[in-house]
Length: 377
Image 1 (spheres, rainbow, N blue to C red):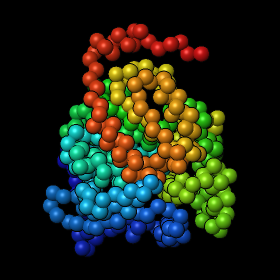
Image 2 (cartoon, helix red, strand yellow):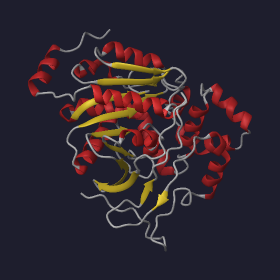
Image 3 (tube, rainbow, N blue to C red):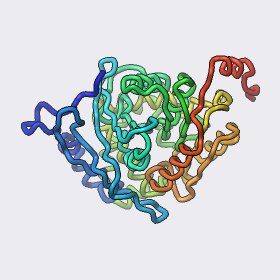
Image 4 (spheres, helix red, strand yellow):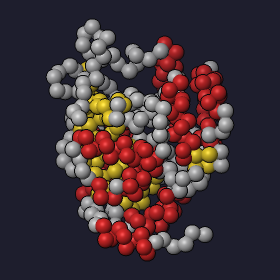
């Protein structure tokens, strides 16, 4: 099914209204209030040409590297597209040409979190970053928000776009989806990259555990206004109490909760969250199947100061996956791909250039399943 041009029919100029313009006044006010604390947005210009996306990200990146590097100001453009899968709208970003790489965002986030990485990777790869169902501009239906459903949705999107085999990259919840994709579709997975990934241990930040409590759906509508009413010092204090000590961690978490200002987004968030987290912590753990990835080139990237999912999970997964690579960003928190975009692009580009795509035949898979993993304690 071909991507569709997502131009708003209500626009008299034929151009789609920007996301900011289409938001309710309270949301626009909230984002203006938090602008000093949030990472700069990717600038956008609107285009209306047959056969092209209705919105294109210009080739200038606003994200400097923590280590002093700056992304080039003449970088490939990122196109925004929409298509319909199983009757539901799916929005995705795409850029570049070459071997395909799919980037999967975390909970309450969107494809936009990958914009800096897309610019760096798209010089030699076709890079695709969707808004998962229930997130961003994609549909938010009543339905299945499990890791398996998300992995199947990624498979269907890639198949529609004509990509049979990919390198799959996932951040946070997206890391869990990436692992599930590799487990369900090993024949389609060339490499696996996990960035501050969920699904590798029990511990997770108190804020997400609290959101999994019964009745949280009654509290979530009140959460954002309470935060908006706080003074700057109060916001910083609340973030510190939750372990969100870096400016980027705080701004991204605030941005995520600002996205829950309508009932459909909140319902999708709670369905997604409760599929992977309960009040005691993460309820999904992929360690018992990591042995199946022995053939799969795997890169783990983590922030040393991650307040959401501890770096110990990355180190544990690295130890359980002989041949995997672990890169720890010592000055970063939960968003190393944003906190030091230049280093992240360098690390990922080197991994892609120095590893061979995995191939898994049926006999090898059968042998590994029969041999199994060591007995769990």
